[in-house]
Image (cartoon, rainbow, N blue to C red; front, side):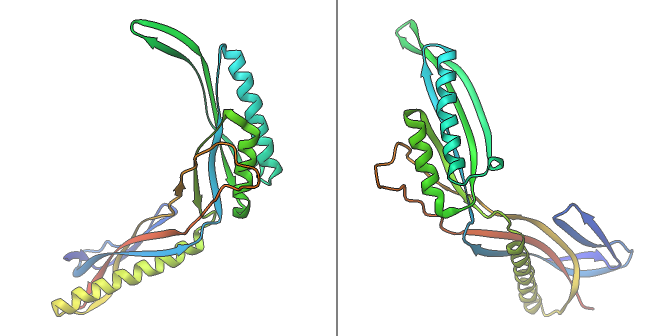
Length: 236
């Protein structure tokens, strides 16, 4: 589209990730506003698992003790397999009663304790070993709520995606200019709309691994995406 914008420029810093270059003068010029997207595909370098325990016992004390024993063993196993202490963080802890219902009668089954932690596995080659060993240590109390893959430091990929986004925006602006019979000049405004490094989720069925059989883990690839909005000056 063609918009009217003032001609004089001022630079404005808008947070760490967004930069805008805007006109603040009183003169008026014409411009073409477009959006652009840049995408870079890369292999993840870190796995993130949500793992824990779920225990049902007749009393709160029994459930808490059993859950603590199982989770302590699972955490010790992960540390023994190279997961750093700083990369293990408690996500949730809950204690609540469970009941059986038969018509109008309510019978207490016991007390459920659930405790989960989030662990970062920075050596992807050890992901299967970390998971299988932790599940073995947790036994029937062990649970895995999910596993995902991400990129620990995506900055260089984001820079590449940002350049591609600007190139994409310029191609679109040039196409519109050619179709309209005008010529584009310098950018009048540049705004970064944000970036995304998605976490690729994978399901995990749980349960103790069979002897000699490792849980198959496939990290796949991730897309680092940056979007921009640019207004290009139409030369007089």
